[in-house]
Image (cartoon, rainbow, N blue to C red; front, side, top):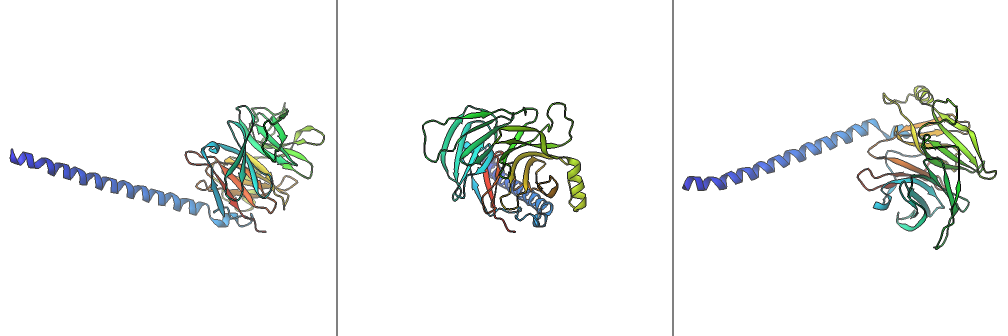
Length: 313
């Protein structure tokens, strides 16, 4: 009896120390795996990849963590050098964000629940894109208001096009629509992702795309510039914006994890693969007047964020 009684404390002590040893091994393996993944990404995505972009995309200069209400942030635009506006893809709410500290200063309800994918500030007005190609627009209220009067623009685009990018071309006073899926209208048979335009002055949607980006063009550019591509190249743009200083068109893609830059003729002039450990789910892009780049990422199990990159010529 005495020996049996004494054996129980010994058993529990052995169990306790065994658990500690097990946890130590797990932590060591986790740290080892984390370091291995980090090392892999560091080798795959180095600063040299972005040497011509004007931006050090391997590390942001600043970043903001966003609240839960913006965990599915889907569109981003610059109002001025002090404020951004954002939308998320479930609720008809415009979020006004302070550029200095990332705080949400106002929430403006403009519509019902829906798949809102892009936002653009143009000359005192806000334009919000839905994935079916329709656009809601209203005057940007500088001060709190009781009601927002919203108008709607219908386009020939539809859900099959899955329109996720909305930008603005100041030279032609036109909205830009980037299709994530089918880039065709009607009986068109183009292979690639199309960018369409809507003339804000004449209120005309142009059915012929302004640009078409194909995988073939990406592969050709990569081959000519010694860029290594993954085995299965994909490019499905989630956002579009014009650079205020170079006047080039930036197309951001979560599916395909890349940033593609076009000149005004539609030629690919830059192509960058984005490190997924930094760009978890890039869905929004915009610039401030000095060329500062803002890219928003959906949360994917973590807080959403806005990454900020300074521009150098």
